[in-house]
Length: 325
Picture 1 (cartoon, rainbow, N blue to C red):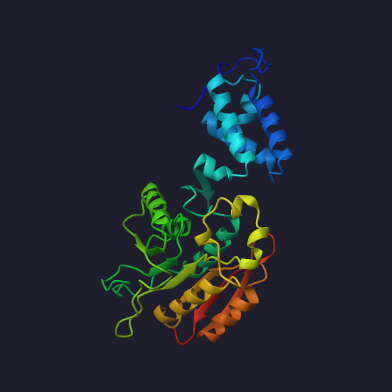
Picture 2: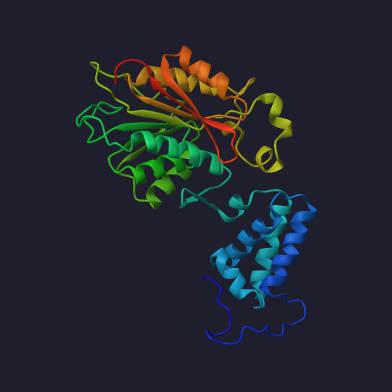
């Protein structure tokens, strides 16, 4: 049950006296911010606020209203434990068990990558290309049955954030959400159920696009393939932030020697299952876009576009299967 302040609506905003050792909400936030800053946490104030709002059971915006209220002892203890975990560089999203993505809340834990703003750019690129609606009704789906709309494959679905968001925004779309990790699929299932898209999102344990059959009799089985694959090169591993290196799943990060091992598998699989005119959208690491664009062109894709993320870094590579749509 969320904590509620003792101050009644309409009462004075003046600080109340507190017992020794019982900081106010504002004092607790300041102290936690100082602790996190001292241990090198990149955004200490924001993370302290996220954790404090979580233990209080209130929105972050509510902290300003509650700043002069004393923390109950049990809340103070829970907040201290949460801050200690963040001091050890455990990501705040794993502590709270939730992360917002595309304005939707998603369950997360150490079995999945934490959804990031860069990946929202990947989703936006797909939405812009599929917003015109589905292909011809009745085309066979990935397992052969007739579909009422197009199919999209999310290769390496993780938490399911991409699959769920696309299914939520495109009501005609069916999604095959694939991941090699059974643990990741368990998290994705929770998110699929949470957002009510279970009727259009199918979860499959497989590697890349191995579970997707080739089109039958020239009919398209897949409208688009989207993937945020592992793309960290082995030489870059030691230099990753501790939040990533020591806490997030290596299976979802390690892209092999040059970082592009899984990218090549996804590109080859997409070339196999996509009909001419089908879309492939990939998130890539900083500096990888030119090499990925070359891989796609060599693999039978045309109209290759490279799109920046919010920081201006080339982050998303979008291509269309060559041939008449």
